[in-house]
Length: 169
Image (cartoon, rainbow, N blue to C red):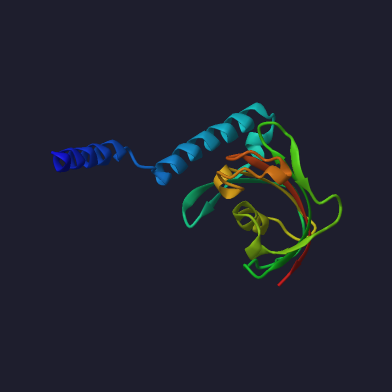
């Protein structure tokens, strides 16, 4: 009798532990749709932005990264992952306008391969001395992770103002 009860108990435990699994691909698609709506609403609500903003396409696929060339630069740099960039930047949460990071005229240098995906895709559209604005879906910024040290909530659509001060290959 004890064996029957034990087998019955194990069967009940097995069946109750079966539930719908976590589907990260579906979650990412859902968040991508939410981000796209946030960006579209922002562009529609900002006078004059719709005529200037361009979506970056990567290998024929539309990304969730948009850019506006605020000021043209000079030069014809070829950007690779090892290209060193020196910038001045301000980073905001698109929905609130709250600044969460900025260089404060410190002018940091980075290798393009070590920056956010949004910057990897957007910065090559700027030239030395130019200024670019990049608006990016959360998956191209900080993704589904809170960044408490900079007070950035998970899945934040981000808005970057970047001045490209120097480019070194």
